[in-house]
View (cartoon, helix red, strand yellow):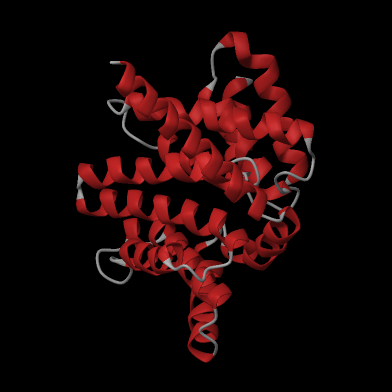
Length: 257
């Protein structure tokens, strides 16, 4: 028993040291620089814009198959699967798998820039969740959440993305996945907590969606005042309806009936 306990402690210490070492390798300035290069392919809700962007990103990758262009391609494939494949029986089926494959190649490559990994690992996990939904393979959903756990352990301190994407997947699961749906409350709250400590932690687009998601998860009367405060913040962050404002206004209208 003592030997097993000792072994467990050693493994835990090794894990902590490994995660700490990786965190030290991640230059926050470089992480933010990559975020700027990826921002235009993340969280695209306009399907017309998405189709135009998809073609442009594919063309850019063919002309210059660089690491950042491959990451952009993997992410735009994810957005295509999320926003278009569920509304088409043919044209965009398989894009979730394409996203997962591209991002897996980057994620497992020893040459990938460490500061790019928070984005790659997070979208890779989400892409696998989309593959699960498209194929009705629940085993893949479990594997996706294992990937999310790893991404959060490694990168949630420097990027909103692991928690944001896990929360987004969790909130859309059917009720009987209650053990996974609970992550939605946990993850969006975590992002808000970090944003309150550092206003540069997440950008306006992500916070618009995050405040809406927090309120959506807490529609009880006891949360009403805080929820309305967050919905007003979400509206103020998105004056041009480029993020979550449409959904925010719909939810606020339901609250105030």
